Image (cartoon, protein in one colour):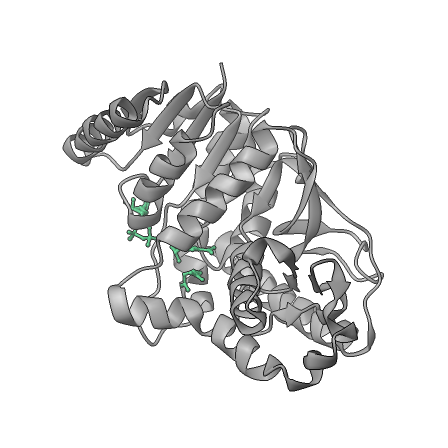
Length: 317
Ligand SMILES: NC(=O)c1ccc[n+]([C@@H]2O[C@H](COP(=O)([O-])OP(=O)(O)OC[C@H]3O[C@@H](n4cnc5c(N)ncnc54)[C@H](O)[C@@H]3O)[C@@H](O)[C@H]2O)c1
Ligand SMILES: O=C(O)C[C@H](O)C(=O)O
């Protein structure tokens, strides 16, 4: 049995993630968890998803619950529970409200699902990853957040369009905060295996505009259609497939680093990590010039928001 549980399954991201994750061939059981009072909605989601399974020939045992305790025996628990930002808000504005939800959730999971990998989607995701790490008591390899994986995909898509190549030809990474202080790694960006900085056309690349478009992408989508769903939903499935398939892919997720990135650490933030069935393992690396300064600034910002939230959580408990 390979079981995946989705917390916040009645929400926009949770409901679509249920669809994308159900397509992963390794998944045999999927549990949708919502808040008490949402039983009818959850039952409706299960029926609707079951119809899609029948149409595409998927064989996943589907159930729902309003109790976190039923997540026990899960291989992966995806947490999308929490409030999303509204137009005009920063993700960090959600920090304390969502930290209260994540702290309680993580405590229960740490106690009842000690072998599960807990995957945070709730924003601000870097801070929520740190909160989950502290309150679950689980080893850091078992806790990670979506981090800058989605931002990296957004940049990949813009680069592919600019150079008129297939997206699979582009490899790129954004590290740091899933937020304004994110840092593009041009030094790790290749097109068709060639470093982007070695292409004569690189000098004409509107790099600043591209990064600004990535930074404001979530905000623009929320302004236009209320929430970001398809990008996060597919990104979630990529990560779950990487874990369950023991794929050892290197993806950019929010993870606890001791000092792996250019000697900088003691924070949960978006970094390249090797991901497999045992969890998430940050890849030690050195950065170039301005990337070091940018990453240090991003770490400083996330440390400060995290420390503030941890203090307020302690006071509130
Ligand atoms: N990291 C990323 O890249 C990324 C991408 C998209 C969304 N998000 C985040 O994911 C979260 C969910 O987004 P959404 O658009 O699905 O929001 P939504 O409002 O549609 O869904 C939120 C879900 O959380 C649940 N919830 C709310 N308060 C709760 C509480 N106190 N206890 C338990 N459950 C609670 C709701 O019942 C619902 O199921 C937000 O924090 C959003 O910012 C992150
Ligand atoms: O931007 C948001 O608030 C949602 C999410 O973090 C995203 O980047 O799509």
